[in-house]
Image (tube, rainbow, N blue to C red; front, side, top):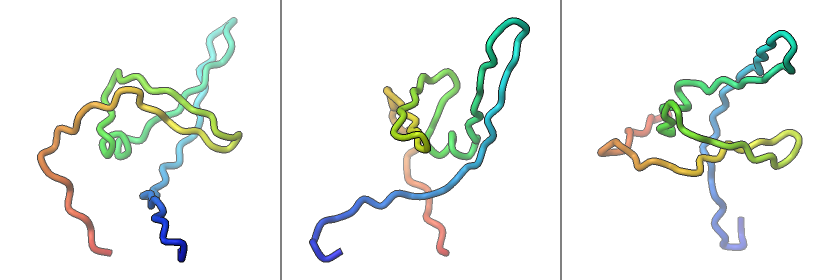
Length: 82
């Protein structure tokens, strides 16, 4: 990039999940998306925390955490050499 502007770099790790449905008699089906434990641990997601979806396009959703708790670790994890 020659314009001198810095571009944000995002860590890209994918966690494929399948949409699940719960069907109760006489009710519309409800859809569920599981949240991978490794991803929850990486961002410090807690049980009972409120999150919301932001629809950007038909193929892109963002998960928003309106309240992000402070980190509880004292130091960052070591980077892996690859």
